[in-house]
Length: 419
Image: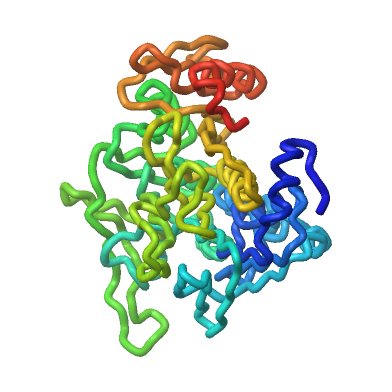
């Protein structure tokens, strides 16, 4: 076994106890990153990757932007070339979903009837989008989580279509911006006061609302969505479920729509673990080493791990966490003993705005612009809560934002930092 540059002694020690076979359930960014981290750290045992989609691992952030707009063809979202995947010397079993896990034997059953047994199992099954009651099967109603979702929605976004996006979070706001750029009549609806109000606080979300309005997005905030309206279906035909005609708000108003995107969050894909005996509570419950049980780990969107600095369990749905947590899980599998304590990070692109957020912005946090000018939409803001810096947000100032990240790092105990 080769030895990495960092933690030489630990890795050398791990080589004696490394599992002979590793099974990664989920061919996602987190799953692939786990495989790469294992190989990078010198693991030479057998690795199998099980994925429910037929596609090789691809990246999700471009789905709501470049792939949805047509700027990228689907292949460009692939995370690695075929040659790079081959070089990992891992067996990829794609198009077959996991349906059960025996934790005692670490055996995963699949929909196709396979039984895959390993010495270490990594759960990387991600999340599934929430849906609106009564919308199942209705033509014109979409969610966006997978590559196939993005392509189906892309095909529906003809310039004459009236689009209503339900959900004012990160994904909904990105979809609204992309669709408006394509020339559609777009309405963004949700119960909060402005786009991404939960993620960036009232000052920045108000600025985002202004950006969307200036670009022609209709905003219908402050009212919950009760459901969708649609035509009656015709039994026995392709349109037997009917077609969407609008979105009904809680007060009774109906927003006309030819296409509706439901972006109201996601739930961890853990239904296949219902009988496994693992702790399931808004994700796979893990300790600070991302360990759910002996020889079983979770990574990425599906993992709810104990964050030692924050002192509570957290589940992070962002691309950066997928990579960083995968490295931590690979290290734990190989015998390293260090907690995973990331500084949360995500970014979003909407119209000409690139927002980058390090740390967290809790409700009631105070905001201070420390670089640039908020009115000019080019600034870095620092957020404090209870006297401590909790987050840094940059708007079209990536270099300065990266430097200000240190303000968040300094608020963490030095010994707790993972990177």
